[in-house]
Every structure is written in C-alpha cells, then in structure tokens.
Image 1 (cartoon, rainbow, N blue to C red):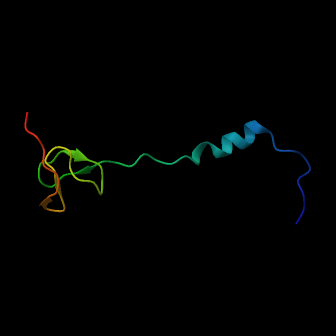
Image 2: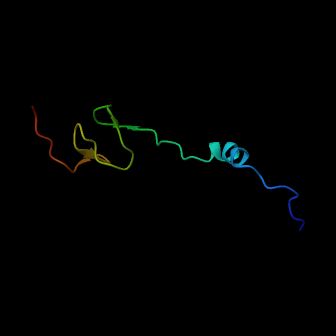
Image 3: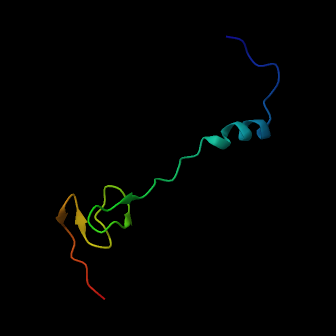
Amino acid sequence: MTTPKRKQSKGRTRRRRAHDRLARPLPGICPQCRQPRPVHRACPHCGFYRGRRVVSIKEA
C-alpha cells in the first residue's frame, strides 16, 4: 500500500466528515390517542404501550 504524497488538510477532512452525523429519530404515532410519541416508549399523553395501560396519567 502506498503512502499519500501530501497531508490532507483539516478543511478537506471536515468537509468529508460533514455527512457522518447521526440522524434524529422520528417520533412514532400512538395507536390509542394518535399523538406523536418516542418510539419504544409509553405514550406521555395516554400512558399506553403496545395496547396496554402501563402508566397512569393525571388528568388536568
């Protein structure tokens, strides 16, 4: 394997790595109340997860 002739600049390296960031996870839709919620979490609006109530939510 050969070696590079010139050092790669920091700007060139950073431009290449600009697309390596992680994407923000998209929220899921609760099947009970149709509100957006984090995936694989109990719904903060109704307290259901996978069709069962797992958290009791206080009504205002």
